[in-house]
Every structure is written in structure tokens, then in C-alpha cells.
Image 1 (spheres, rainbow, N blue to C red):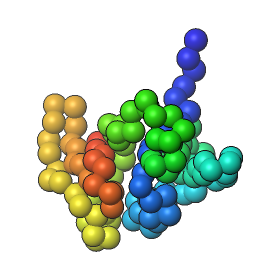
Image 2: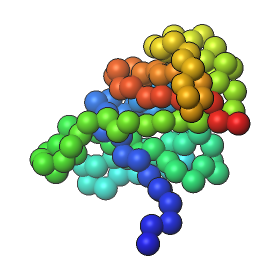
Image 3: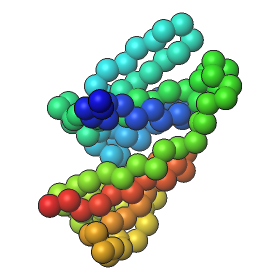
Image 4: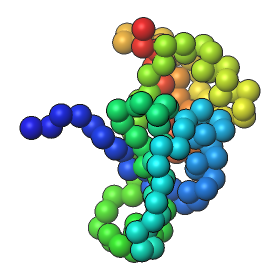
Length: 125
């Protein structure tokens, strides 16, 4: 049986730029990083004690190693306890953010990283 989601693999064109975006603009922390042959990976998370990490892989290297793999960006929904503060914080760092929207399930907005990958954030009290 499954017990939890451990990692989300995110394939990017420029790993160093992606780490810079997630740490400097989104406030994530680098949890670990390493290399295995041509494969370099960097695990990031909102905090060191997060149960799930996002692991950044180089899209070109992964495509060569696993030609049939879907390299598209997964649709990720993040949660925050203070949506307004996060919205202002990302906006002040020139992150492309969408409008704050009221949904039946709560308030939400979307944002994109420097490679124009789309993500969403929902207020979670």
C-alpha cells in the first residue's frame, strides 16, 4: 500500500536557474543534491521537515536517458496559511502571478517560474 507522496520530479532546462527561483523567490530550501553519472538532481522543499520534496532534473539529460518519458510540468497545487502575504511576497520579487480568485474550495492564485511552468497556491487554514 502507498503511505505518502515522497517526491515530485520536475524537469527543467536550467537547474541552477530553477534552484535560484525556488530558493530566492519562493522561499524553498535545498534539501539535498547529488550526481549519478550524467544525472544531476537537486531536492527542494518549502522547509527541511516537509514530507514531500520537488526534485529538479535536467530535461535534456532525462530525455536522452528515457526517451519515452513525459517531460511536461506536473500540475502542482501548493497550500499556504497566508495567501495574501505570499501573493505580495512573490509579486515583490517579480514573479509572474495571476489574480487572486475565490473558488468554492477557497481562495487561490497561480504563478509561474522563470521557465514559464505554471503552479497554483490555495489558502489552507
